[in-house]
Length: 515
Image (tube, rainbow, N blue to C red; front, top):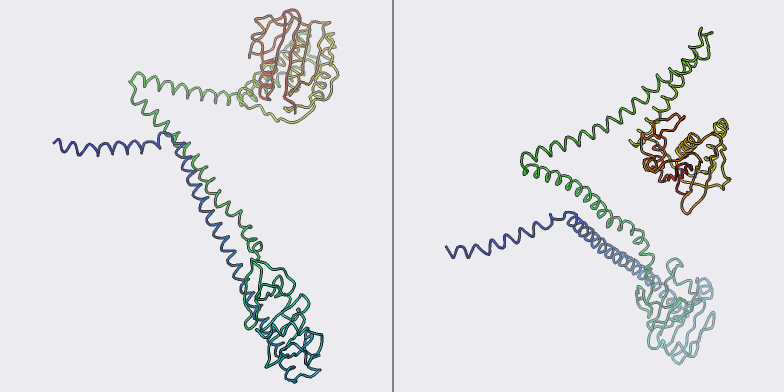
């Protein structure tokens, strides 16, 4: 038994170590997926780099192959040309060439025959220096040349024959484009410079070889054009794999969270399980209540305002006697009261529905660049008549154009609400002062009055929905004016600041981001 336990101990230890290693990737699934994506992307990058290198070498090899074939073609054409002019030289040395035959040979410039010492015996055409050629020709065939002419010399019997001809007659110009001939010593023929990176082919029977430079840039042009495809092969799978990994990780975490919650629920006691179920039901009920609230606001906006518009309209018809006299002056007073009450209720319901839409995120905002000074001036002009009727001095300090990034209609609504509050809480004979100034990164719009202002307790609650501050002789609204102002400013990235001292008036400042 002891032997069996001793033998089982290493196996159990190995099993435990392997289990821990296997559990490591699942402890932090994001790190594991990130490492896998890096490994996959690295594999594709390595494969792409190897393929790029292989294709580059293959392109250079293919270019070298074609240039080598071209060198052999040039060598074959040069061999035929040299042999043809050598045959003409042999005919001249054997005194079998006439002057007419010489003149009819294309590209032929001159032929000379000299003895072994270099003394010219016969010559036709241009002069050829046989003294130097005779010594070279005794050792083998000679080819010399420039960009204009080529001279070949060879031994014929006991004499030396030299033939000169035009370099252009050696081979077609298209075939020799960029290529040249070189002697066995490396001296170029044809005026082109000597290069090391060339494809060479010997001219059979003559001490000359054809040399064609390797066009590496031309060979790699197509390879360079394929680089975007290599990048796509490398980056495409890596990016797609990363996106899929993010989706899978998010789904895995969501399911893991749900599974953990289920395990936790199953492991708790019945009382705790009931509390968790009640909490979940309460959360679901809150969501349903929020949704119902939104649906109520959307439907009641039309249901409430339509009958109110009818009440206000009919009251105005009775008050003004559109269909003849009413019959008693009290009916006119009642109709006026009905109209005033309807308009007041219409305004309060409008504020409530507007605030509800703001809270639900349904109030449409379209931020754009515009001159806020012009909008504020228009709002002030719209309230001049109301201020004049109450003998309140409403003035705006001239200001430079100031562009902001906000919703113009929302800014107009905010400034109108601030002006309405200022005119409402300012006594007759008072003053309301409006100004626009530019600060660093923001534009500030101030509306200052000299009314009663807020008490410290009221200042803390200003802007809270449905919070009204009673004032003698003033008809209160629904208490949503400042709440709408604060909500609209916050949604546009701005802020509203209230500064007030009881008995000294109030200053409301709206700050909006500069465009």
